[in-house]
Image 1 (cartoon, rainbow, N blue to C red):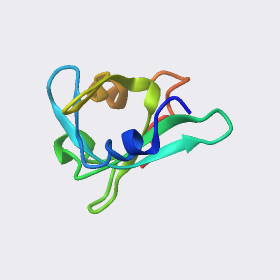
Image 2 (cartoon, rainbow, N blue to C red):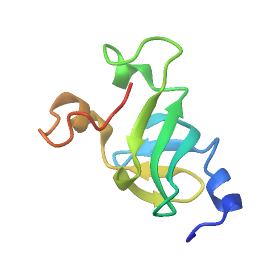
Image 3 (cartoon, rainbow, N blue to C red):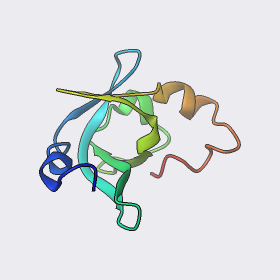
Image 4 (cartoon, helix red, strand yellow):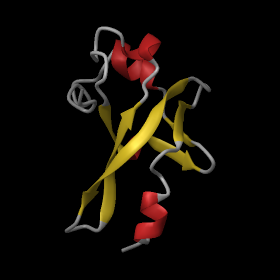
Length: 98
């Protein structure tokens, strides 16, 4: 596996921001593809409800595809979630799981 389990669990609790600097949420868990030995998604909670109102109820989270991740450091940067929610592509319409 490319990442050790310690590195993967270190993602939990990190804040997620869009590439525009907007707070999106906090990583609660990761989704793994054990056959390919890679991270495939991030489960977020503590969401920015201004972004997700009408998409997520109170106390719910979302799952975003890991391919949206641009960089991982003290925080995780992802492609802008605002544009994805307001005008999803045909291929991306089921990407965000609420």
